[in-house]
Image (cartoon, rainbow, N blue to C red; front, side, top):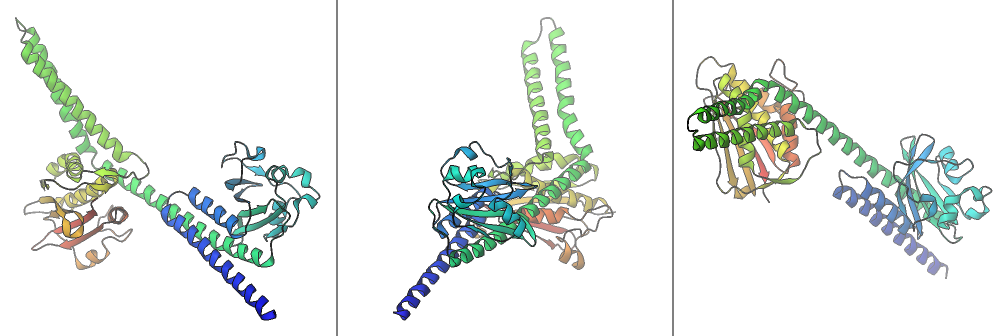
Length: 424
């Protein structure tokens, strides 16, 4: 009989461990599927915690100052939390189980909430009908960041094994959650750097941008003057006036398009997934850099691909990559004494790689073996006034789109930068 009991206990323990591993797997899956949103991760942690210990109620709270925020709740709606949102901070009541958890930084197990001296003050417990409660701290090193709580509506204390199991689950969930937080902070820092780099690059092209805007404005003024001259004729040449006015409309539309493109490149916004026409996106960037190329004597040619498959991605980010690579090539050739200054931009569908390949080949001084090996390292630059972040950011953007970016030296001189982007 003893062997039978021992075997049953071993089987129960094995079942609990399997359930715990499954619960952690669910949390890790939620993290993988939701890299930029913590809410699905919070909800998955609470759902699995509740199921793991056969509880009816569950919550995940984060501490803020002397109070706490409820970020996930698994229970029927109750008056106490009616209209609650994640920004509302609830007080930690003196003498409450949560206050004991804050003080001890250890799990708090209450076999019967109704037996607590301050039960009358626990309106949340009465609202939920909670009787048996288990609170486990979420610790980042020695810092208390939150708590996972589960409760039963019947007086049914949790076993030591369940408490140990739940404590272990909470610790692993905390590690996974903090890892996601750090990853999100890293991505936010990358976005901030990318935005700063984009603004710096656009600042370098101020003269080019000004020229691009002045052109259609000057054309519109000339057409307006022509329309006035046609109206002064006797009789007025209505057909010519109409044509001049149509040209003015086209010129103002062109100006508006340029301003919109510049505004989108300056705008600091989260990545947006859309279907991108790379042919059109590249033409827009080359238009913005045309005057800079002319000023430095660089001839820019483009070879676009007909019937190019559209790629999923963030149009502004991909244009930032093109902007950086074009400006880098123009600057590399600007210091040359003699020789042709040419930049060839090509784009091809590459079925073997399942996507699109863009190439930028210049006739500049080329790449030394040392610079080639460190080209994409953060803060590495060969420019006297460079930050050394442009190419590093470009590679991060391309890799985030599932592609790759690389460079190779050309003979007898020059360099070729290429990147690939997967197509739909």
